[in-house]
Image: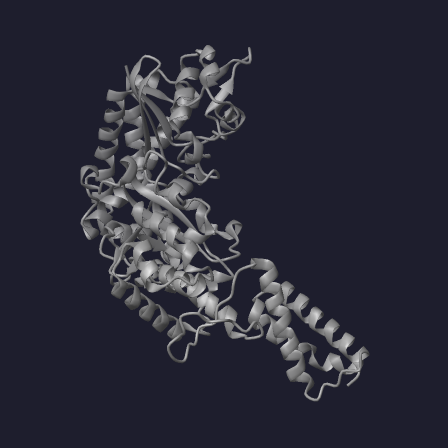
Length: 541
């Protein structure tokens, strides 16, 4: 065999290397090392009677050289056909070694710890019994079960799509978040946590099954799952876990949007006659008359959004039984009281392509802060909507307690208080000016641009809004009922999800579709071209 003939085996070697390495870069390095060894052997006159077998052997050896260099771990060989010896020595040329180590890593803790101590650290059954404080028979049983699992799982590759193309799962909630922002903060931007929740959604699964699916050993998966269970995003069932909240897919989010938009166009004019009557009544309130023009438009946005949203939700609640009163929400760790929701987006998703996002709306978000600058309580109330309709209300920072204090200090024009704020809070001022929460006067003084009302006036707005949302839902009841189809289907085992979450996607785009149409037709905010986010600051002195 000569060097030129080696090229015939490149594809074969690359396929073999990919089965071992699972990424192209490492596989190409492995093939290169194998071919260099082969060329050296040819130069030395070594005869290869069976070139493919010879090259396979070299590739295997190079692979285990790479693993030893990368991990510097001891290897162990377990006879996966019959019972294993208490102390086994591995053959470094064996392709089984790494598979065994992978299987061992995928065992759950109670089996993994005895297997590692016995087979890798050479400890006797009696020593393990003392170390773990369990009977020797328990050690033997766990060794037997561990060997059984390895025999079953040996050489199996069950990696899911999540192991190489992780999806995004963004968490939100209805209710009161925990003190540290749970449940959102439990997951945050952690791709592993996101995809564990996705994998455990359709049915309960064991932790080793999750580990195999995501391509990470059980050892590293366990603490993440424990955190998700502790913060009540997952629930345990026997030896399995499952995701304990609703997850919406792209189909769930979009299937009902065309019907909602079309109905909003048909009904907008008639609905807005009722909303406009409510706005006229609002404009006669003394607390409204005390606001600046910049503040009144935001108060009107708040009233309009709340009224249309509650109108369609009245009919939704009739179908699904309604939302639980807040006091009946489950108590969660760290002071939380919430129901979680998740939105899953596939790997590589083009977020800019979401045409339906213009109609997105949050539920009302309220941040209460007590004993602030002489006030008993301050509440920031808002709805997050798409910037292209009313302007941006960013819950990621606008509803932090420190931000609420900043708003109130600017309202009081007490700028000396800025010294008590962290730099990260003050750095938000320019962005808050851009979204029309603040503005500067001719003397460059910072002024608050969102409405400030007394706490009793907040309840008056709610009562006034309820009066008109009931008119709308009564008059357009039958039309709204047409939206209440295609509720999101839940996995059969998932029992804790309130029914309103299944129906939320049926009508969640309708309120902003109505307001979008009203604004386009000149029925709302006519001639006003600045951001008018639905927000108000309520003060109890």
